[in-house]
Length: 276
Image (cartoon, rainbow, N blue to C red):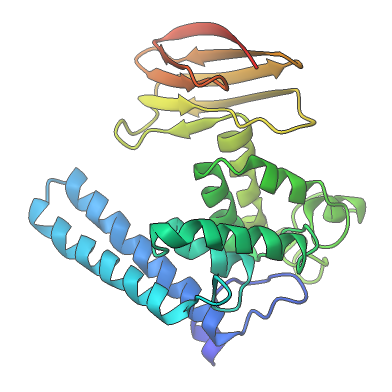
């Protein structure tokens, strides 16, 4: 009955207890915190200025309770110590800034040791993992897990005959469960570097910030927007980086290059080079 009402991180790999009450509680409370934060932003867009402080206060108060209730200072860990339990509080801002580095270290240590370098989340956790990793430019962390061919992982699915994403990492139940396709956001937003700008919705303005990883020398991506097709292509060598961006008419973009330079882009095709 408990899990039926509060699923938490559904369908994690073997060894992760999806019915752990602490894990279920932290996942659902972090989701609620994110909803309050989102409502504050929606109120601002709609001009409901009087509603903003109420949602912000609920967001901040819940974040404080999440940290107070679930944080283990001795272990620098949250709840069950699973990947989603560690990542979600950081993503919603429940982890106080002085503790973020320690929680990150716990995440990396647990992922390398307890989870043997694998992705160790379920359907909910994949989107949380990719969102956090993209925002914090932890591309190496994600890419290292994606390269694993053993259970659990996407290459394990492929090596065992999957042509679509499974519901369970071991292939039980549904063989067509596109919830796990949240990993695709990492390829678009982190590897290709395409992220929207909330201040200019609908890709009227967008960011291009490719996150480079060892072993990948090029990437191409495109996206249909209300202004037309936008595309990004980059290629790297040992000491140089070339970025090509097509910005639709009526839109604009900001490109963030690996050398730290920011370039403002208007409508049209652009090719930019820098040294690595």
